[in-house]
Structure formats: C-alpha cells, structure tokens
Amino acid sequence: MKTLSGLRVLIIRSARPDDPLAAALSAAGANVMSYPILAIEALDANLQVSPQRMTSDLVSQQQAPGCYDTIIFVSRHAVNYGVAPLRQAGIDFDKVEVAALGPTTAEMLGEQGIAALHPVDQTSTESLLAIPEMERVSGQRILIVRGKGGRETLKDTLVARGADVSYCDVYRRVADYRHADGINLFLDSDEATVVVAHSGEILAAFARLDATGLGCTSLAPKTGWDLPCLVPGARVAQLAGELGFKQVIIAASAVAADMEQALRDWYTCPSH
Figure 1 (tube, rainbow, N blue to C red):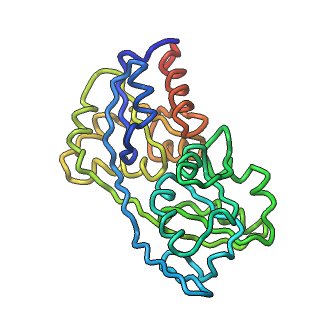
Figure 2 (cartoon, rainbow, N blue to C red):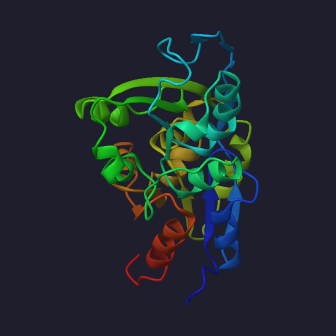
Figure 3 (cartoon, one colour):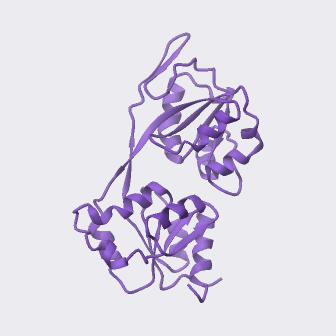
C-alpha cells in the first residue's frame, strides 16, 4: 500500500480524543494537523418527570416518557449530551427502538448499554433512511436527538412515511476561530495540502475564516480555493463546489476508513 508521505492534511472538525482518521493518516505518513473551527456547547438539559408526563425545554412536544417507539441519535455529540438527561426524564432505552446515524454513534451507545440499529457501510441520513426499519414507521412516534439547527431531511422523510416526529436539541455548534493563525501558518506552504471537512457547516465556517478579522485575511487569496478538500458524500461535495472549492475529493462516508481510502486514491493518482 502506498504511503501518504509528503502530504499535509488539515482536519477542521470539532476536537475529539484519539481521532481515528488523524491516527490512520499519520500512520500512513501524512503530516496531520487538527485545528477545529467549530466548538460544541451543551444546551441546558432541564428535564423533569412527573408521574404522568415528561416536560422538557429540549423536546419539542410534551409527551409521556414511554410514548416513543423509536429514538434516533444523529451523532456522537447527541449521545454525549442526550443519553443522561433522557434517562433522567424517564426514558427506558430497553423499551424503545434506538437507531444511530452510523456505526461510530452506535458504538458509543453500546458503551452505555444501549443497542442501536444503524447503517453498516455508511454514515449519512440517507443511509439510515434506507434501512428496512426506517421504511416501516407509519404510526410510530419518533424522537430525534440532535444538535440545534440540524438538517430537516430525516424528520421530513419520516413524517412523509407516516411517523409523528419530535426533536430533542441537546447541543449546538458555534464558530471558534482561536486557531486562525495556526491554520494560516499551516496553509502557508508549497507542499501538497488537503483540508478535511466532515460537514457543510464546517465547510461554511472555513470559507468565512478569511472574513473574521482574526489574522487570517490572506487565506482565500493564498489558496484561491484551489486547496483540495476531502468531504464525506455528494451533499457536502456539492456545497464545497458552491463555496468555490475547485478540487473536491469525495469519500463514500464519514467513516475514517472511507475518508482515508478516498484520500489515498486521490494522492496516488498520477493526474491529481
């Protein structure tokens, strides 16, 4: 297997311990730098349970704790910030179907003793919607645990399939440009460099970096958006194109192995 020696990789998603993608790319010989430009903030989990009713500032409708047929966690942050308050609110995860957007989120739920359905090969809303259990939801009450302001595709599709869907917003993403100077310095190189953006929101924050007035005003002119960008899936790739990126590397999913493979394929291709 060819190495990634000589390639510089900038990962800009929110920080995570033991990032499997960063570890894999480093092991393959790449010079990897992680500079998150979005921070995750928990929303207040003011959940209380009465004998008959759960009330919540997070859940969009008041409903009894046992009334959900399915609870969907859309990310690892949804697990981190959502499981405990929902348990405190009276949710018994042994009595509901639980689903996750991908294997990493499902693994985190498993660590908390919660078995979850999930798409096996990819991590995306569309992949979750394609599994049989998500196609047979007519008449079900479904709770989506997510970050504030997420995509509407999951809810809209489930509603169209006959489900009654509520949201539980447990965190939010906020721009965090404390690493602007470090990013600018890392990009100031003639060596092959790729930026890795795991979502459209991260891409948009990166594209705004040159307008923040935080010492990174030369970012866009330096790259001319010729900077190659690695993204998971066609939806984020389309946004990258709309933001002006001229070289977009599309991985099959956000799973670390898929992101690594897409980058290897691109880097070892003579025409890149």
